[in-house]
Image (cartoon, rainbow, N blue to C red; front, side):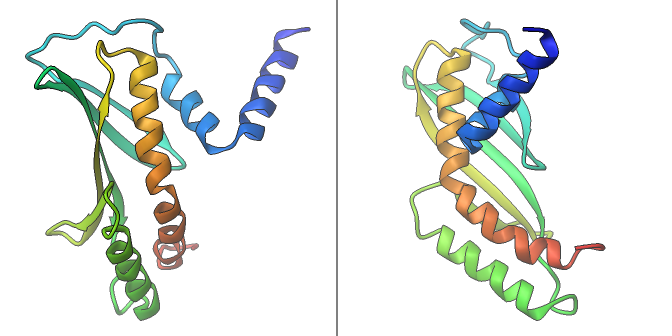
Length: 159
């Protein structure tokens, strides 16, 4: 089997497995496998893009436990003058999302929709332990991201 066929097979497998496989593929792109070099005084910082959203992450040690924090700026809340319906829908989605444990959706002082979430991860930090935490957080907020896509793209040029 040539490399083109292998790449097409890998893409088909990732596509068939759904969003978790896409997330794993994007997160691991360029990452080294095995234990990650990390000092207890500094957070292990990383970023990745998932379905057009740029996420920032930090893994820290707190009370001899691993803690993974993810955040993302999902974009501005639509102005009422752009679309009253889109603004109202986005606000309802944010309110409903915050009735759950995590992650949290909130509005910044600049009226941007922000996602933040934390989850415990196994120590020592490895690509696998971080990927498990990232997957848990992102997939738990994915339904909200999907619902927010409609009101946020409806007010963008070409949306």
